[in-house]
Length: 401
Image (cartoon, rainbow, N blue to C red; front, side, top):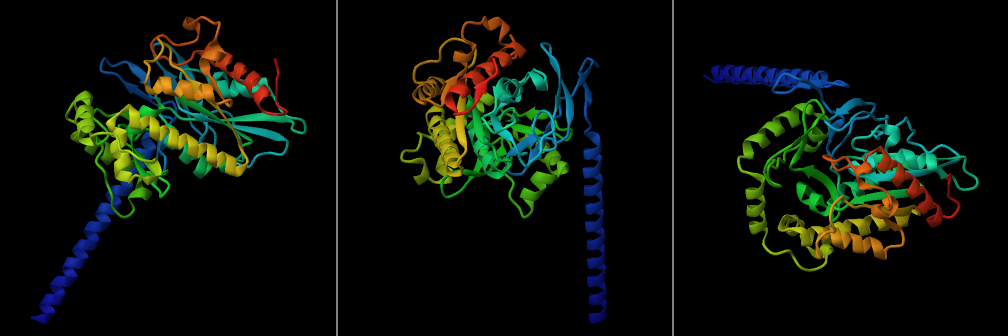
């Protein structure tokens, strides 16, 4: 009898091992297939059968949520523009650059979202590249190098976390923070893991996902659209596995049956009134609910993050300057986050508003009519205007024109 039980146990263990081996084989084959599916200048077909370039410059990132693929090239084409986007080995847009700052180089790290990235313009047309050409180095340095760390859709949580985990390691002399008027609202699109200072140590996007080919996909539904997954090894999978994100994207699609507006109203009602008290005194759960409650708390937390960026730069002896990107259109409503950000910038001598750099030029030539981002002409004016402004702000720097 005992021998029969032992034999059954051995059989169960053997079958279990075979099953685990098959699961591992299928997972490995699926991961390999997804990695082979992504390639530079990939294309897709629309419903009418038209071939369209797939803008697949993104990759999932276990810390930042998503980032740019290193050493990549993709065609970005819409009805208004068709440009080629290249990234270097550092995962930054533009020409090759070394992680270690070369001798005789004054290095500027341009941080921001799609405006810093240069949505709709060529690599050399984005304002960080224009700034590099327009700015003369301080005495003793041979040249200025501007690294473009802009990523579409990022907000102040990702700006700070990128600086802390990767940006400062690049040894910038100056951090140029490109803040946009929708940055506070974008904080509600992320689920945050916060430290004791209530600063992010991990970010999970809840409406933006990177598909198996590296394209950004937007989900309908609110901040809880993507199921929250927690299990051993989940962080590693989030950072390394396309198969994990393939499954997660499909789970999220199943979980988003309602319209975005309906979901936002429900979440705002569940969030209740914005929490009171200093940000650092609030629980992480209260902060997450506060970000769902609306613009008032989103602005408060945005300011908390910007102050942390300022403190982090000061602690390392790195200069910080801010460009506030103002959207095209009428003046924002009094009391709105956009109006508050303009007031904040007006009180900060190290902040310049984009309208000041574009003043006197026809708006039709500066913004894409449908997309809303700056045209090559807009980037040229911003880059050259920044060079003149920084030359007045930073000792030793000079504008070339």
